[in-house]
Image (cartoon, rainbow, N blue to C red):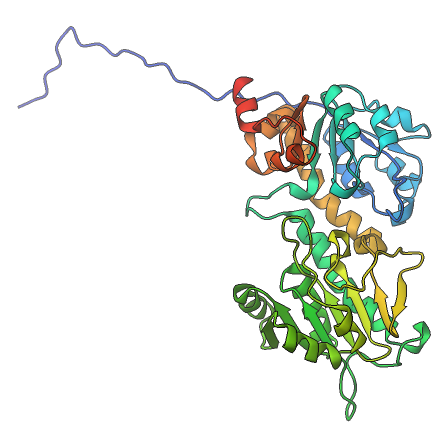
Length: 401
């Protein structure tokens, strides 16, 4: 039978819902000069500023902001940034990007509803500082808590990679006679054994310290309280090395013969477990070197105490201790590029979404870093510590739709 179409048949068009693309928003970005002690990094490099300016954004840089990372005002000026000499002028920008935590003096310069991208250092955070930020309804994002598409912390990982590599290179220097060490070459030579390196912690810092030490020819032993992390580290390195769980007896024996000991344990509830006792350090060889990378969270050596880049070491029982909290700042140009590589695409993306607030609402990874949002504390750990009201960011954003 042939198909039959009745005269009453008609086509009824259906509505089609099209996505409304948000209008790109021009951003005003301020980069102040860091005044925190031992902070040499800058949050955005001139190369990143070039990309932002070419995308239509305004970038204001305080004079000498990149000096610690060997970036001159001329580099930023040629990239299209506006150089200013008054810090208050920088804080007129709607988005402030810092490589150091916000200080009490800088809070006074912040304008209401500012967006601040910076790290957060819990030991230095005070209740009155939080209250001022809350009153100004600041949107504060801790960039070390930002997650990427693979659910990892890109800035933390970059800084950990730097710390692991730097720890071994620094230890090698302090083993030499130039720094009053024992005069030992880390990798040894034909007929002369290499140095013994003990690494406590099999995270990213431990992995990259092990890579550097093995690459230089040292003998490496790694301790951790997780068999999984030890297995993962060996797989990532691609070769077998000596590993052990954190057994005090075995750890003490290995430290007694070690030339270098690297402390790289992850913190538990914000504090690094102290696994190396004073007695263990006393049994170490005279002239051996301890690098406590975990010192910013208390350290895993009982004998550790924070030092500075100006005076980085001290001796305890003839054992050299290097306990600088901000190791990455010692290679500030590399660290600045690593931070900038993460932050610049986020800023550009926020413009595509119509602003940072829209990006926060659309990206779970960015929301993970938000700890203050327009007068509300959105991190439970901060609210508990300072006895402040906690507001869930997801619920807060849902009420604004």
